[in-house]
Image 1 (tube, rainbow, N blue to C red):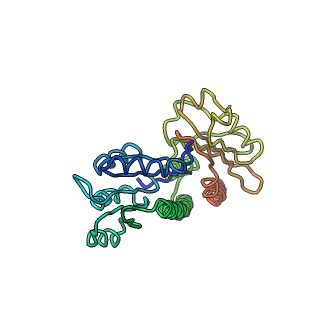
Image 2: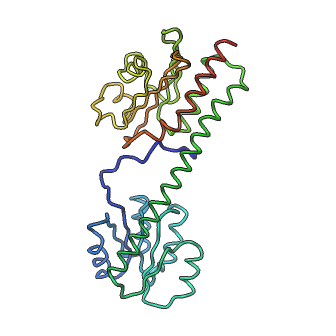
Image 3: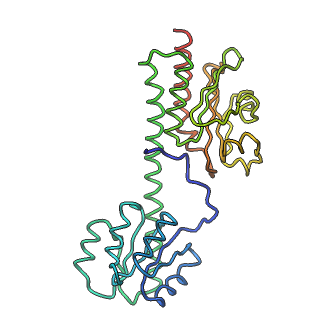
Length: 301
């Protein structure tokens, strides 16, 4: 499923992650000492061990690997990382003139740059910094594309209501199911509100028998008709039985308003904590207005 998370999970370690791979312990230690201040450095003495580290730790920004190693060469190792980590930037260290292997790897997009041994530490640090900048730009570009696609998918879900002969409750369930999946939410609950009275609540996910009626974040959204966001409920001092029972780590509540008339409230929850929910709020801004118009059309058709 190509669901998109609302933002990158909160990470306490702000340093970029760098994986260094070399079968010679002295070179491995030297690479670690060179980069340990600016990077979170992971070390592996072979391509096989490096693959295990990536499997256990996930994506890194940059990989530096020796070319000539037992079991598999650096370029062979890199080729195995491309499918799962296409954005990672790869740098090869070589003391030999393996021109054919290097050219093929570079042409296949597996190698960003190659450095000959013995390397100049200052030049290597400059190349790694450039590689890190390239990684950051690539991730930002991909993220912006993901946000744009997510916004289009949210709006498309609402637009489909025009072709469905459904009740208001069925329409809200259709939206809750779609938006919950698109936003990778653990829960998406929508409660209808008509002339100030709360109606039924539809839910995507396992709500564990909980109710929105007395939740402070939902009450605040209804009272102020403004968006209420808690990217990290523990940080925002919003711990409650509601969150513990549903295993909620972040919570977003959006009022659905048409010409100053409150029609519904949307509650989205995630099992991960986030630094911010700004991107998902931005993605939903047009879709929420679109939903308000759709609800008015259903109520008065």
